[in-house]
Image 1 (tube, one colour):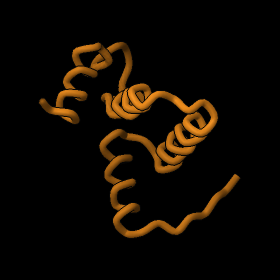
Image 2 (cartoon, one colour):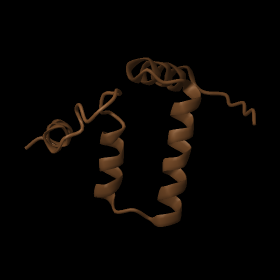
Image 3 (cartoon, rainbow, N blue to C red):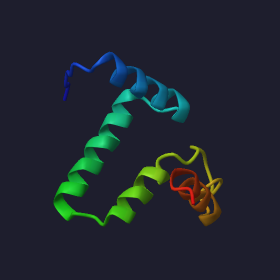
Image 4 (cartoon, rainbow, N blue to C red):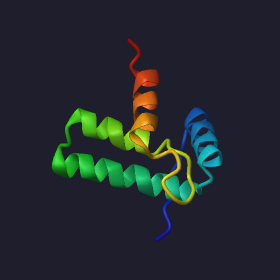
Length: 83
């Protein structure tokens, strides 16, 4: 299914940076975003779980468990919520 959307220059630029940094296509990023919105609307996840999902998507792509440990999640949380 083909979908068209008009994005602001700021949003389009942010999407392109996001995709380049993670090595994914715009379609993949938008599908992930829509899925997260649907899950949130349907299940009313706790805010901490939603934060975890956002952080999980920031982990480096690749095989194995590289970068997926609790220390990585803790580091990302500390960076986002210092102090």
